[in-house]
Length: 77
Image (cartoon, rainbow, N blue to C red; front, side, top):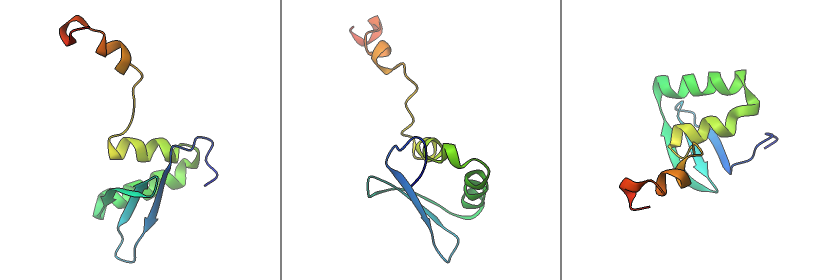
């Protein structure tokens, strides 16, 4: 993969039109139908952000505020 940011995601397409996304070699998501088509369109448009797109789709996208939230008083911090 030649992305500027490598988060360990890769994808492959099947003859049935599915998109299989994996993270460090482990299955993370399967997109079918309209979702698969939209994903492939977005990848073609913006190859530099493919890793971030796959992270968002699989729900593993960090927003940067996790450590601060852990110290919040309602969380015992």
